[in-house]
Image (cartoon, rainbow, N blue to C red; front, side):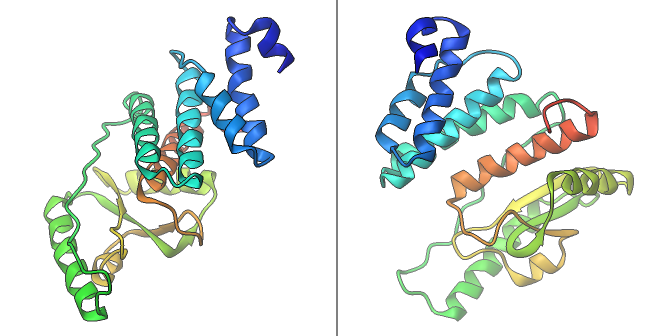
Length: 219
């Protein structure tokens, strides 16, 4: 806070606002965390854009805690755009969102299976024949960032022309579709909102490319 007070208008002061927000968040003070994170001004370049994305993601997390879900989605979508910029230098990235099958408040197991089958059919229509599929599912394999980077390199070396990371709908993914995946990947045993999961996955994909390139991003 002393740095913010003395150097508030400088790059150092701006960065201090971001980290002040993180400190308040760790103490559980959501009000001050949101206040200082919002004061941070986005900057250009690397690692600036990555801090921008982290800042937006944290503001999204706070909005979820405050049950302001519409606001959270806005922050997560902005964070996704920041990672899209970074990944454009590493690969040809395409984000595709397919329609989710609508179900009632208390669907039966049969209704859920049928909905997942229909969603799987839409997914399979868009999969590249020469590509590799990585299905995100809670029962999947947990991997370190280094291990994920190595796996992505292995799939590419085996001739995969495209890597598809698949996040399921509210009820997950169809079992038959998961069986076709080259890898079932889990980020955590916990469940995350879809928009947050997308940000987390994009960050890990970016990190995987940076590990392969040998940059200082991954420490």
